[in-house]
Image 1 (cartoon, rainbow over the protein chains, first blue to last red):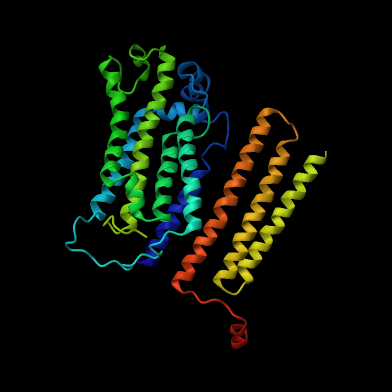
Image 2: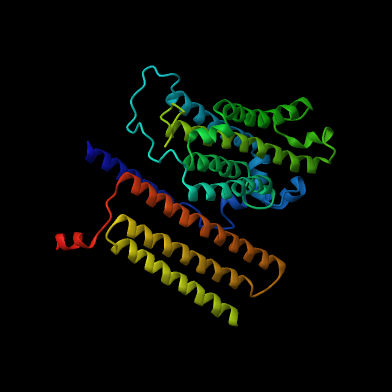
Length: 252
Length: 111
């Protein structure tokens, strides 16, 4: 059986290697991806159509906003699945965990405590910066959301899960995750109500005090905030479920 | 001309500290001494390398380059804060778990 698997892997790998010769060279200007008129349109017209200097953000949140919406939904679904599998309410059918007593002592460590207290505000401000600065530099909702979620995880690691849940209780986490998706999809539906396609932001200039180009610019920010909500909440939710064995009590 | 030399010296010094840390991780006898080598070597070498990079940015002291240098120094500051803390946390966790410290007599028993 092992030999069969090895042969299959080897055959697939050889096929892939053989097929890779048909790829255009890296950065080839004549390759189909570079010469097709759509990519030329993105490169030359993004700044005129959306006023976003960072082309990647514009393509991600505007031109293929539908795809990004469902990427956010994928993250949301993953978080819900982790909760559905791991979360255990009450004490019935509780499997004894490998380590009932927490590894770290109850009393928080002074050095770790002070460093965490110094760092968490900075991490959170940086996360907001990454979310809001996605128009100009690498960043955006997914990255900023992960950084923001990591700040809660850091608190849960340094103290315990209780301390982090005093900030974001489980219920609030889930509401936040749903809110993120609702903000994103709501913007799309709003565009439909105003008489344009789903997620076609330029029609929003009717309710925003800007022209159509700036309406697209600002809608991208709103959409990124929605994504950041979902990613933050799901990051922390997955961590707290995994680390506390679904009981949401001790954690590591 | 002097600025690239300063930056190269700083980066080379950082690499030297890195080598020290790597040799320490490989050669020291137990968990605590290894963490000591890793924590000290990494922190100091990252600091000197980042300082070298920041100095290199100042060759052409336009506001944009000075901003980049300041950002690099911020990274250095955060590494100075977090790296010793993580070393401390790891060593404390090891101590709580009861990992034995290396003593001179251990070496004699082995050889």
